[in-house]
Length: 218
Image (cartoon, rainbow, N blue to C red):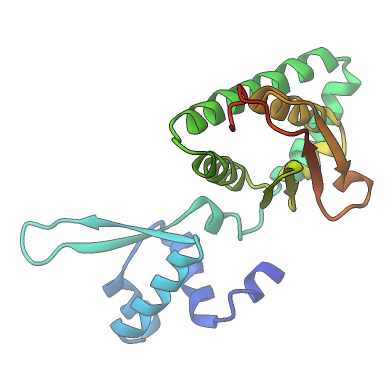
């Protein structure tokens, strides 16, 4: 319930529940369901979109003005109860009990190989060092790491304030090991992890040596 409390508005919570039940909602349907005015509801929807919980599409009609259709984003859907984390934990435990560690490693290696390909494409399309750092930050944000990236004379430092694999890491540290290797392959440098969330730190932090001219981020 804490995530719901952070919304700070009973109306926005009600709109999210309506969207979850109905799948989509027009402004007119929201007016009918809540009894609130169009301007008030429009303002709430705008705020929900800014928060990344709702998005809209335009539905064109044969007559009249196009209508906006509001739907939940994946982040909005995550506000509702699910058992995915617990189920994943049981699956990982089962695979380990069945002696499938090699299969687990292959899965996570493929996962990080895919991430590496996407990240390299993002960085390759950027034209300056600042743009590459921005592309890397955006990529890590999309992956759920809440990154902080500092680029100084001493080199590059990356601090990840969230672990999107927290349930997985309870059962295997493979994602952590492969993440470090991902950074080394992406940036062409040795990486040193100086803080680690599973050991009680508030973030996973990495530092890199001073860039070489051939490094992708240079």
